[in-house]
Image (cartoon, rainbow, N blue to C red; front, side, top):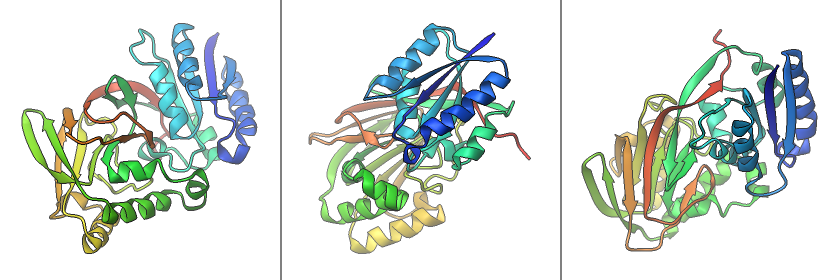
Amino acid sequence: MRKAMIISNPSSGKEKAEHYVSQVRAILEASQYAVVVNETEGEGDATHYGLHACKDGCDLVISIGGDGTLHETINGMLDQEHRPLLGIVPLGTVNDFARALHISLDPEEAIEQLRSEQTRLVDLGMVNGRLFANVVAAGSLAEALFSVSSEEKSKLGSFAYLKEGLKDLVNTPANVLKIEYDGQFWEGESPLFVAALTNSVGGFEKLSPDAEVDDGLIHCFVIQNIGVFNSVTLGTSLFFGNLKEHKDVHYFTAKEVHVRSDETIRTNVDGEEGPALPVDIRVLPGYMKVIVPEKD
């Protein structure tokens, strides 16, 4: 009999996770899976369970929660000889990875999509020895992202990030960043550097519309010369999907990126606080197989 593990964050999805777990379990058992359910209680639990799923030879792991739960789950599968197929039921505020894979943001629909026989090999990223699924950001916006309260995230969703980010970009001086990528070098003042694997960052699906989950590239944006007027034009460019064309944005794609600064600058990784600079970022092409909705 095939084995499946459900890794669930009980505080996600307005505390309806237990109900969703029951639904997922029923679908898996009907498909002849022996199912184990693990609920997270604190930081690192999902990573611990993800590792055990690999060691125990599970065929399938279902992550039920937000981007943070998913981030921890995939890190449990890092460098493992056996990596299970991954399924996702998004219950978070933003759910960037699910958006990029066209998985429904409605939990009931996402659960039904787990019946799909369609899978996709997707890229993951590595930053200072840890996996990430979506984005690494450094600078004032990165700090704003993890200063947004959970209440604001719940009320405003991705707009909470934009509101805090633009306010912070205008009021915070730029930092000098030194960026090496695939044999090239950029140095200058910037309040924000973004390295994205997918088209969806902070819930905005047009940040990098050309990015695909399996293109083997990191899509990078260096924002420059921010003021009140520029923050408005940048926001407009973001909404219309042409941020990389903005005159104050340096855009490039790469397979490896090294970012450093003489100043103390923190990062945001997949929506959570990450390591301080310097960071080494690289793409891991086709690193994980994920259940995706069947095409119409």
